[in-house]
Image (cartoon, rainbow, N blue to C red; front, side):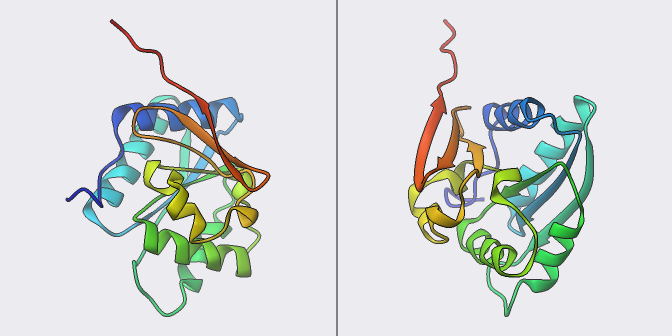
Length: 161
C-alpha cells in the first residue's frame, strides 16, 4: 500500500460513523476500489458501523479500469441502504460515480466518502455540480460537504493535549 492507496484512518472512520448516525442511518452499503487500501477502508468502516449497532446491507468493489462499471453500479444502487459509503482510489471511484449518475437512482446526497475522494481534484473528475450533497471525512476527522458547486469543510476535530 503506497501513498496513493491509504487505508482510512481511525479519525476518518469515526467521523464517517458520526456523520451516518447524525443522518439517522441504520443501514449502509459500502463500495470501494479493489486495492489493498480501499478494501481495508471498507472493512474498517463496516466493522465500526457494526460496533455502533448499524447493519451493512452490501459490500461491493469496482475496478480501477473497466469497460462500463454498470454491473457494479447496479448492485451498489440496488442495495437500498439508508446511506451509501464510498472509498477510493480516485480513478475507479470517478468512473463508478459517473455510471451511478447515468444509470441508477443513486444519490450523492445519501452518500458519504473517504478522504481521498474529498480532494478537490478527485471531485473535479466527476464535477461538483453533479455531486451536491456528497459528504465525507478527511484523514484528521474533518468533515466536508459538496454544496452549491463548492467543497465546504464543516468541522475541525478537537486538538487534545
